[in-house]
Length: 331
Image (cartoon, one colour):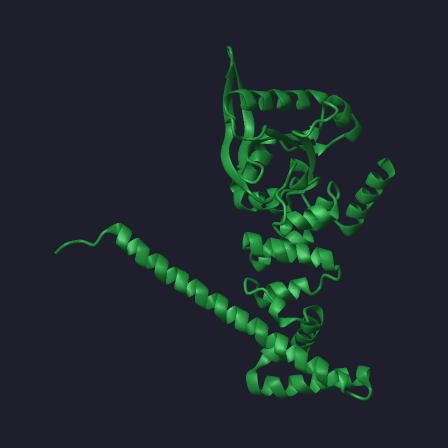
């Protein structure tokens, strides 16, 4: 009896998996449309009520009681209130994205700022973020961190794919949030500890780095005459079309650290970069930094060496606002 080829079996598996994924997406989208229709009917009924505020609460509570009795706990007062808010936030049915499920929409309707909400919608669809990944990006203040070094119009244009990033500052965050490592902030960490933790959590680290990154190597050895050197992490970014070298420093950044990274970047530009690729980018992840020192230690029009402070906890809104104030004062 002949054996069937592995490639044939794999093709059939892919067909089945794709069909199952399509079915799940279709069910999720129908669920979203159902909640939108429920929300629309609730809002229209409310608007016809004589005493709108009182009638709205009465309507939701009584409707929930009837629906929970007929269909179960998935139609509670709280859930119906989400449906109502869903319709008010997204009043045009045709604008709903089939890539987004109900859990993701529940996260999005909590965002009052329209531009911010638009950014997260676009990035979720572009990168196929799960609901958990979307929640993590919102909680880590991703949108606000990108605005620290970019104009709002640029951030939205890149998210909507209306423009390609022109410089590393458009996609590299400062600070970089590494709360997913589960490390407690303390001064006794070695660079190796942080590097090992990043490698162990590479998928989430790539999410934090942003669009277009792929991992190339760790502790990349380069030889300069008789002296070996080791680059902590090497990535490639397909959007910027260049290598990205990352050095990890668990101390406050020094000008010697910047000089070391500049040497690595020069090496990659002269020996690894292809003629059709863009210049190599170097990023130092550091525990702390003096921005003025960084400015004077690097060439005036530097665009390829960046210093990003890392933090091992999710940022608070007040911290981001404080950074915005500093930028406004310095400008």
